[in-house]
Image (cartoon, rainbow, N blue to C red):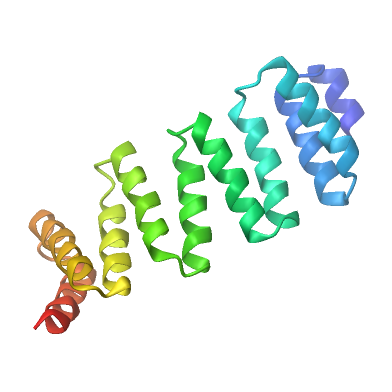
Length: 166
């Protein structure tokens, strides 16, 4: 199948990326690394290729090494929202809520009009449960209710937050 794609499109970046994805999935890691290396040699800042590599690392590395790889990627590509979201997800699964909060705050800086981020931040602050975090959660929830007073999820979360604060 890949040879048909090569005949039709040549060695286009997307074809090579897809070929690398397939090779990673079937376990031919050294060949896939060769394609990724070839793509990164052309363009060191190719986000799509680096994401292919990160997706493979997620399945093969332990959590700490994967977090290190994500952080290294974000040092150069700080405005990649997908990777910030992925890193936040990893931190949440490891129950490292303070670092997950940091990731969501970075996401909020990238897209301040995404109100689901405010909800997630409020929930994470509530989960941490310290007095300062509860006050911050309350502020995020009040902001969401100010935007849409009929939203039940922030209303319910605000009720629980205020009960804990009292």
